[in-house]
Image (cartoon, rainbow, N blue to C red; front, side):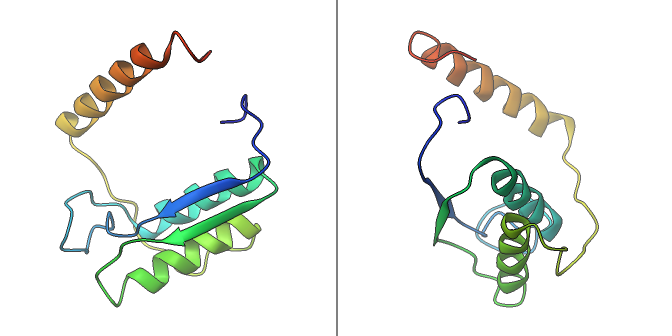
Amino acid sequence: MQAFQPDVVAVSAGFDAHRYDLLLDLHLSTNTYYSVGKWLGERFPRIFAILEGGYNIEEMPRCLLNFVAGIEGRQMAYEADFSTSGMRVWETYEMYLHAGMAKLEPYWKF
């Protein structure tokens, strides 16, 4: 993303990957959304986000507030224990990551 040097970064902000959201089974913590927002905010001056998903009405606002706090460089609003993923999740991630990179390699420098 940084190599492209975008004027604006658009984020499809879905919070249904939270560990207590019943739609998906991805187990992210509210801390993860803060970390993602912080990473984006430290690298890109202009960001906008469109709220997409998040169906646990108690956790979604916490995820959203953490994400925005991360972008703005403020302290995390809601801390939670970080979640962990099993080896199969990491193996699947690595497989998809490398497959995607192989397809993009003719067009993009990694």
